[in-house]
Image (cartoon, rainbow, N blue to C red; front, side, top):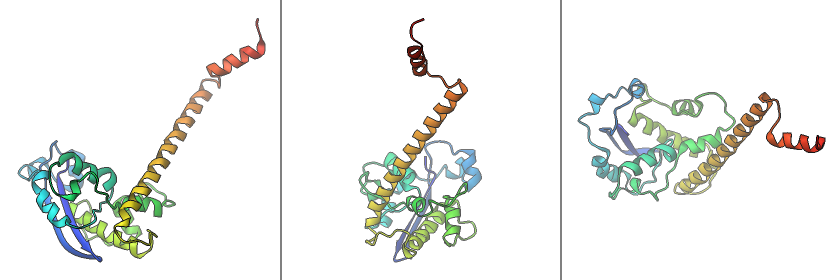
Length: 219
């Protein structure tokens, strides 16, 4: 489960409001996660549940377009899984989000290297400043994402030519394209693995053996 949440309202590139809270998680915090951000079970033990901060999240998010880095596969599902019955638009399963990671995967599709799409790497590549200590903190990350989105828009990476609200649909379309590309990649990997196994087995399948027998005729 989530153990911290942060929200930032950005308008015309200017920070208008911010919210941060530790959260009491539904499961023990993994030690590898604590090693990154320093939050332990003891630290979060008295924090509120995610549903208990929904009203504040709704206040900051009012009339805004939701945006999050890897929101399509993480933030959005987390919110929908843990919160029901609130008026906060973030928790509406029909609410579309802008996801800069989806946009980056398209804009930087020719960039190589392990970890190239991690937020810190992307910010460095796109000239987005991150203050010391900001990385791997909830509020620091949302501030970086806000700056990154502004940079993507200013440098024409989106090329939508439409208002910000259009970016939600743009994100959805690019995410579906990337999903289909990934499925094709998995299919190729599976086919290559099957061919490799065939080669290791001597290059003969049951179908091949049947064809050989047909060519030889009855014995």
